[in-house]
Image 1 (cartoon, rainbow, N blue to C red):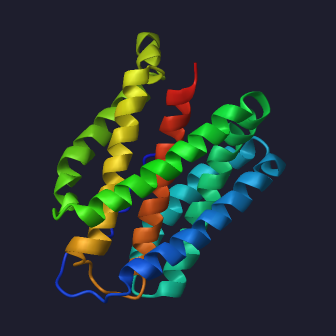
Image 2: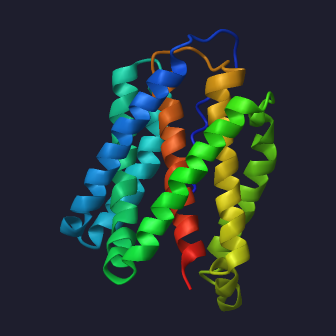
Length: 219
């Protein structure tokens, strides 16, 4: 996964309803993603490639259509469908073989998201300052993951507890960054689609965190 939206820009002045609208859009996107996961077996193997294309295209286009909430949400839905098709086979496989792991991971995911939101709401600090460090860590994850396809000795690193723990921590950090943008810094350019862009960013964080937590819990 690892898709990150780069459409957020910093400016002054934001409406107080940004957080509520963002969480509302996020809930809708999670419902769309869940439906896509449930229907993913119907797409077969080609669904993975459709998912990759949809997730990448949607991530790019949602930022480019941030001026209009409707258009932004349409592309956000494309992202949710694409990511659902991508993670669907993983979810179905784990559900069939290790259903306990799936529910444990989902529970841990909810705790991590709630913890991130509570931490940002309590600590008076702008967590968006973590973005350069998180981006550097993300690049290291991507490079290591890419090399594992060509260098067999690195494949063990990708499956290691340390690698997946670092990945989980990075996306928990990104969750705190996005919650901080909504709550404290709150200086995202107030276009109609800003809440959608933030919701898509949160969705990407949640899906990637889920995958890292899932691999972390596997024996």
